[in-house]
Amino acid sequence: MGSSSGQPEFDYLFKVLLIGDSGVGKSSLLLSFTSNTFDDLSPTIGVDFKVKYLTIGEKKLKLAIWDTAGQERFRTLTSSYYRGAQGIIMVYDVTRRDTFTNLSDIWAKEIDLYSTNQDCIKMLVGNKVDKESERAVTKKEGIDFAREYGCLFLECSAKTRVNVEQCFEELVLKILETPSLTAEGSSGGKKNIFKQNPAQTSSASSSYCCGS
Amino acid sequence: MVRLIWIPPRIWLEFEVSDGRGRRSESRLHPDKVHEVVSARESLSSDDEDITEDIGYMSEFSCTGERDARSSRRITNATISTLNSGSSDSKSSYESEVYSTPDVNYPTSSTNPRTEEDFRIIPLDVVRSNSEWTPYSPSQAVISKDRACRAPEAGISDLLSPILSVIPDDHEAFWCFVGFMKKARHNFRLDEVGIRRQLNIVSKIIKSKDSQLYRHLEKLQAEDCFFVHRMVVVMFRRELTLVQTFCLWEVIWADQAAIRAGMGKSAWSRIRQCAPPIYDLVFYAIAASVLQRRTLIIEMYNSMDKILRECHSMAVQLDVWKLLDDAHDLVVTLHTKIEHSFS
Image (cartoon, rainbow over all chains, first blue to last red; front, side, top):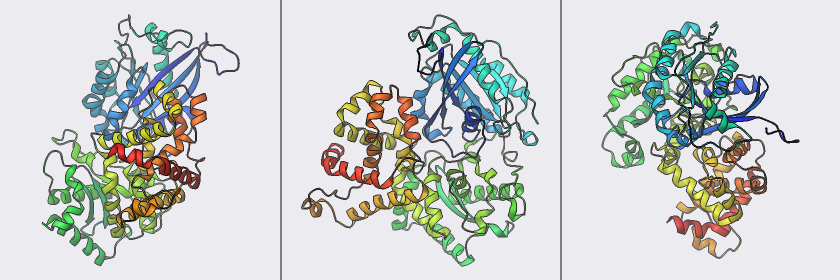
């Protein structure tokens, strides 16, 4: 599938969306994942976009990762980016409690409102675990939230790169387990508009992070 | 201690004078100037119609709740005390300062949760928004990058950073920024009416100039020109270097000043081939930057995300003078048509 010569080859193309409050580290997480670097970044305006190629098992994957601005004033425009996403990563800052409470107050509702894909895999990510002494949200709270909303869950640090790759890999593995999503993302097949399978996001996983 | 505070939606900018407990090194204004600024602020809250009109847009953003100057002062003081509680006393703390107690002080179940998040400390955000930022005074050097990463108001600080970097006095920078935001405020409306209208103008310019490119954009459902959203919001600030930004903005402002001075079309109509001053030159510049890449877009890009990526990677490739030349060419051929359709 998708193995024409000359072109970058991939078996699946998945669209992943990063959402969450302003300043929680969405862009840093993405930069950490795509370029293995960490830097002070300017706040995202509107939306940004990066591509990452991954090989999982024998499957070559192309991830198109959309990094949205966390600020309210850019939300209407960015809402169209939920369309067709196979994975959505909700990011909060473990040192800022409000970014966690806003997940249920704002971001989960945004997903319900804008996501067109019933089977879309959701993932909860608590960022900045390198600042353990400033932690304001416990890991258990994250796990409980993930269980309630049927998401995957990880804590990570874009700065130290702890769990950064795992965030995306776990999400992708889950997408690969969901037939309707793999059918959509397959480079060989047509886009599957109708989703036959019920969501497979009932159980929350809680991977470890080794907070420093 | 004096700080420039950003408090949307009710209150835009606030100079605050501390009770003296703040770090001396953060003081940026001479006490006399502080007094002037405070007086100016107080006169704003009076019924002085001229000044009130000048800052009339402030009230446009008030949606709910009445937060008067007094309560804003209270909030501001709280902010500053929060900042101080987490800051070290060392001047050399620019890189390493740990802002240790920021949000712990925030009530977790506040009845008005937005209050704490609403204020923004602009100089701090400016550091984060502007990679070329070099502090011009010791007072700016104490601003910690770590703090700068908190609660950013994306876009607005991009517009402020060039102003702060050329105007050393806070009070002058403040009023320049107020004047600037009178026009730029439309970019930050929550209902996004302003930004959509502006994207629509860019789209219209592209459609009028290059129907083939426009058809291609339509095919990709990108004719709304969302891919230039960032350029519109911060007027190329993210695509150009600081010096290039000064060039572009000054040309844009010179056009606007010429219009205000009455040097409108009548004077220019006699000079063929010369672009008349135009109020929205920035949209022509944005359209020009897209049109410069027309072949690439038509031949290589088959989805909106690729065009977006191209637009976001223009940073090192843009020649501001070529951009202005192309923009002026577009103005010469299209301005009557475009202005007419939006008047």
